[in-house]
Structures are given as C-alpha cells and as structure tokens.
Length: 289
Image (cartoon, rainbow, N blue to C red; front, side):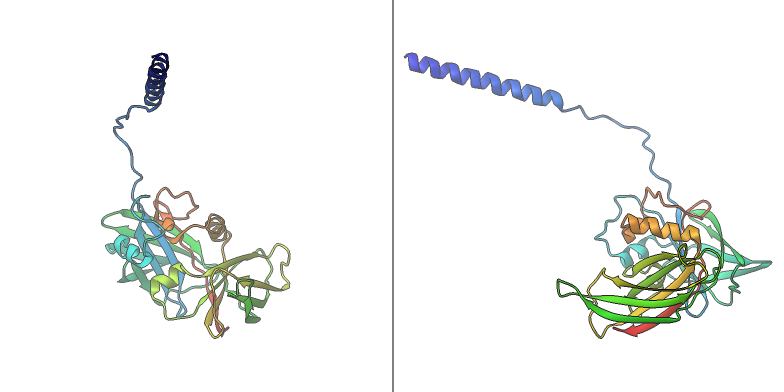
C-alpha cells in the first residue's frame, strides 16, 4: 500500500509538472494580430538596355514583382513573358531628334539608326498605358577593343574545365571601367543578349594602369566548359554608375529573378522606375576553347 501511494503521488506530481509546462508554453505563444492597411510596394517599370552588334539599341521593359511571385527556381524566360510590358511607347532623343523604338517580343523594344556617338547624351522616355511614365539619361561610352585575347581550358581539382582567359588592351587616359563577360556562344534570343543570365562577369578599373597597356589572366569558373566549346568573350567600357550597379549585384550574388523583385535596393538612373539605362559599345570575340 505504501508503494502504491508513492506511485500515485509521483503520477500526480508528473501530471502537475506537465500541466505547468503546457501552461508556460501556451503563455509564450502570442495571440495573432490583425493588421489593417498593410502597404504593398508600388509596381514599377524595370528597364534594361543594350547596344546590339548591328549598332541597334534594344530596351527591355518589365514590371517589378512581389517577393512571393517568383523564386530562383522560376524559369527566367517564362517569368519575363509574364511580366513584360507590351503597351508602351518608347523613344530615345539625341540632340533635337527623337527615335521611336518598335516592340519586337515580350517587352523588348528596338530602334535602328540611332547615332551612337561616344560622349553624346541620350534621353529615354517610356510611356506605358498601364504603369505610367519613366525617363532616364545616359552618355554613350567610348568602345575599347582587345589587342589580343586567348582562351585555354583549365582543368581544376574536380576534373571540371574552366575557361582561362588572357587578354591585352591599351587603356586611354581618364578613368575607365571595364566589364568582361564569358559565356557559351550559341544562338540566343534578344532577352538573353540583354540580361546575359549565364555569363561569367569580371570587373576591372584602370586606377593602377591609367593610360598604359594592360594585360591580365583570369579564370571563368562559374560553370563547366568543355574543350571544343565556342565561347563568347566580350569587353565593354561602361560608366562608373553602371559599373557600381553591376558590382553590387555580383557582391550580393543577385539572382536574375531578383532583378525584377521588390524590395529593390540597388542604384538606378531610371526616374520613376527601376533598373538601368546604359549605352556602351562592346568588342566581342568568339573563340573555340
């Protein structure tokens, strides 16, 4: 009888302890709060631009998206077809002339025969029936060309092949900011050309070699290239503002989807919108690895 009494007391104490812990845990769970008048980010126009090899200008217009509308698993091509802005009138003004851009596909507008003179300012205006007006201005950047460029396969410790790029340029006086892109050369559509979703990007400024000949070697190590692949190596001289914009994207490993997502804290020269309007000529070489 004594043992049973002790057992009953232990069970009672265990029950009390369990109820006490449950009560404490329940007291730590806050009651759900009702939130009224929650403000969502305003949908804005996102601008991307590029001078194509035929010297035409292409501008990609999309709307910004909410943080839950897409993820890094989303297919960029499908996403852009959903968020493309196709109801806009797009013009670029140079001096006293205005050049209209024609809608080609999924938010891509193109114009031929715009005079792209280095140092000349160009003014973009976008009038969308659904999202309003954005404007931007940029100065056409002078092109810089490769003197030499060589690409060789580099086999790493994991038996993968990177592209080892060696090049030489003659740097002109004044501050210059360079972007080098390495990607597989294949037939790409206009959106891929503008956004370069699979390119390895290297940034170089001329603070240590201003007005001198400059050579370097680097390895494009973001993917496994194969010997025999045709690679596209490109060199662009860009503005310091666009250089810093790209630098922040690279430092934060910004996924392509996040370019269009809110909130966006990256610098922009788009008045009333997001993205970047830039016009720079590019030297492109296609080389077999």
